Length: 470
Ligand SMILES: NC(=O)c1ccc[n+]([C@@H]2O[C@H](COP(=O)([O-])OP(=O)(O)OC[C@H]3O[C@@H](n4cnc5c(N)ncnc54)[C@H](O)[C@@H]3O)[C@@H](O)[C@H]2O)c1
Image (cartoon, rainbow, N blue to C red; front, side, top):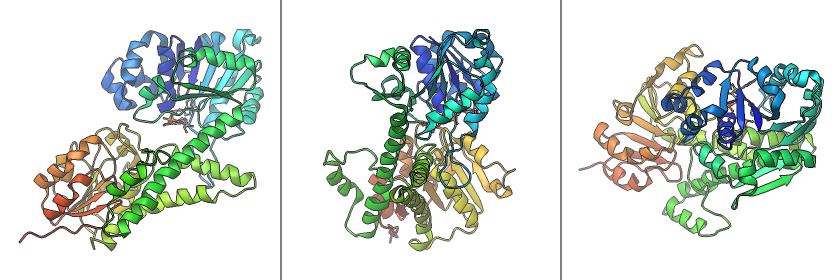
């Protein structure tokens, strides 16, 4: 089949790669010229540093004959006549009005640019039926708006499908090759058939739930699934973690064993975190809350989960002052980990962003930062042109360099390699020294670090004052 992707970011690029790998001919159009240029190269490092997803580079290089990335809209003209499906993989961020309402302006702009090409297919006769597939996370009633936008462009003979993406960043390719579910929301049998052809490799695969519903249910299912996951992560540190911080003799790891032994609770999400970030959980919860309120009902739990997430990050940061009496003024501090989680270079809503802003506001002299994948992203977030105080940020290339000459470090990301950070700390910085572990990644070392004189603040543990050696 011939398939067009609009938006070649995390979702678009990964999904398009899988489509090409499934034997389809794929064109990916994105306004980001540089991203398209980099994804077109047969250089693993260039692809990986553009979208850090394990396996994406190999998949793209292997299927190069079937996949093209372009920022040139005119390439659509040659491709559009035989296109059977268009995947919309555009950003749907929260609007600036802080209500949670989705900003659909990226979607609107893309339809305006695409419109003349789609309406002009088969010399304007538009004989071949086309399916517009919303892969972006969109409002529950998006199908109405999608129809309106495409009809305004004079586009005919099309169906609209909601096919939400459930991939997990850091495991996007693995998740896309072995998804646990495919959710297809369509209104006509014809469109379900087209989608089954696109997803033939998943439709009849054992172990994959291929779920066909209506478009409202599909869009709603995505928002609700994300809310339940978000709520669980937030409850893990805002309730479970905090309880363990405030009650002596209660170890987070021991309590966790008790909790996860109940299969209804399960193991996922019961790790402690400084903040549940990323591109989806926060904005999707905001969108859900907004839609519930617009529908005339309450969204208190959804709003409360959002509030608890922010509270946790700020509470964690403030513990340095309230519990360890640490004064940030004129200090040099290491921020270890910048991506919102391990396995990605994505910094959208990363806990590290808020922590760095707090450090700057607290008057630190220098913030040394390190991440195995997200340094370039960090430079974009903290460009000096935005705020000249960002010149206090110094970019380190490894764990040793980031810790050197600091008086405290804050671990924000759960990269596996940070599990050995305790040894680096011991060899590079001497007590008095404050370690703030937002991920409990050093939990097996807390007692020995404390015995060696290091002060420790960890999500889910009371403050551990370093023991001075006699
Ligand atoms: N990232 C995830 O883990 C994930 C998972 C599931 C669902 N989603 C949803 O998928 C959607 C896309 O997310 P993403 O993470 O891929 O975002 P992204 O920012 O990585 O990618 C979006 C791409 O769209 C491009 N774009 C913007 N305007 C355009 C236009 N007018 N025409 C063509 N391209 C344009 C951008 O340049 C960017 O490359 C969002 O709705 C998101 O909520 C994301």
